[in-house]
Image (tube, rainbow, N blue to C red):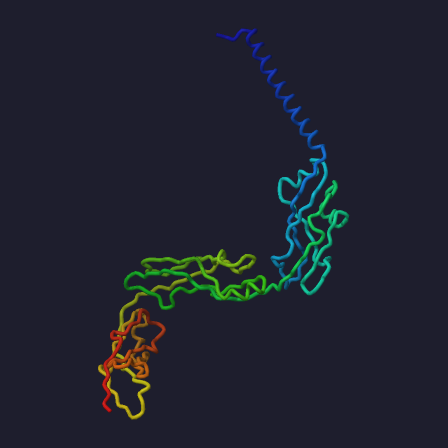
Length: 321
């Protein structure tokens, strides 16, 4: 059934009344805000202090003044800019007063024109937290240090790697205050954990920057880890035992005179390994009192073999004279 003209007129009148109410509400709110912001206020504002034009070989010491509180007086429009975010003040180190080598200061005060210029504030500066800013510069030292890989790697049966994980680059450049840099001798990577590796592998690893002291810069922050994987097999060699440090005038016999060395090696290197690549010794100087056994030590072996072990750890000996 169509709406009557009377009902339609009443509906239009109500809608117009709502619009009028909302308009006046918005207008009075804006007017109230304008009046409030036009009033003068006193507010303490915290500023970050930043220093520019530092020499290339110097860095800001953490004991330098890096914050400053000012008490400002002005209308709300002028102070609102300091409410949304923390403001900063910049000071050119070339304008500082040097007291001694690498120690500087800036004089401050309500009447200091340079401070007012930095503020760009049309109100009044009622007070400044301190009358000087002290600046200490430290030597900005750069040093190249090695990278240590954190890893847990298990190869699939019958597989291995001659070189293991190769990092590129294998060192990084760090920079920062000399007294901190001198205490850092290496950095570590994120953990590389792999199981059942049977093909070549490559991954980008992050340097663990969080473990370093603050204010240390690192370049680069990532390294590439590469693993060249090949088929491996088990090999062994019978190696003669060399007896050393036998006192003059003593004759000693050992049993047995050879020991088996067992190892894993890549198939492509298997035929390159021979007996001459190994050396096993028994040091008479290390014999325990009242013992008839000598401990065996493997002191030479090829770099291409892995998981090397002596089948026997000791040999029996007798003194003939």
